[in-house]
Length: 102
Image (tube, rainbow, N blue to C red; front, side, top):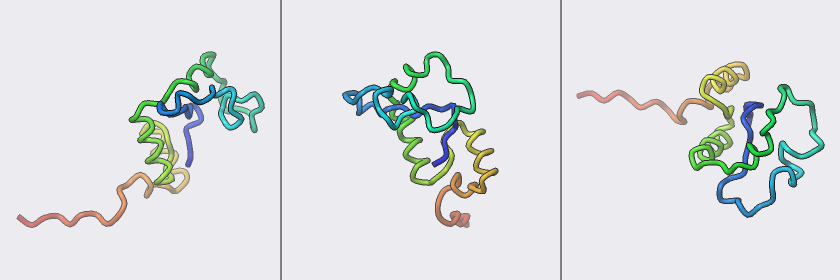
């Protein structure tokens, strides 16, 4: 899955009893990043990461994970998909419906 580098991946709302993002070694807030950030983090980054995801955000993340398509706003996802040759991941699966003859 390819993510927009400025779109934080937050905890699902169902996981409110888990530890905060800065306590988890696999989150964006952990003190030892694997690589430099492409952009400066906003001052409220930790609060943003610890905010639970809405159901619609969670559904969008699941969709992107299942289809292996870029996660982010539509314009960014379309541009990134084109650059990476992933345009088919943004279209519905299967053959197009035949037009009905009425």
